[in-house]
Image 1 (cartoon, rainbow, N blue to C red):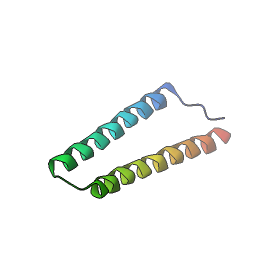
Image 2 (cartoon, rainbow, N blue to C red; image 1 turned 180 degrees about the vertical axis):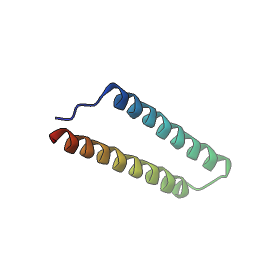
Image 3 (cartoon, helix red, strand yellow; image 1 turned 120 degrees about the vertical axis):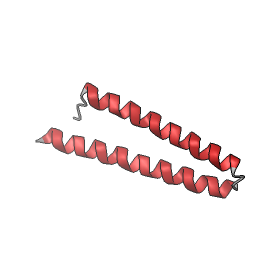
Length: 68
């Protein structure tokens, strides 16, 4: 079982806030640049994919460290 400390939980929520801010920033800048929908989605999916990968890696590492 993965047990996250209070600090890890706080960092998790800060990272989620940073990702939300990054998504909003990319969308806002692409609107100002009059980018196409395809161009916007490339960046949005890239950021979302990297975020999901890092969250999965963090969970896996925490799980492995909890087994020791």
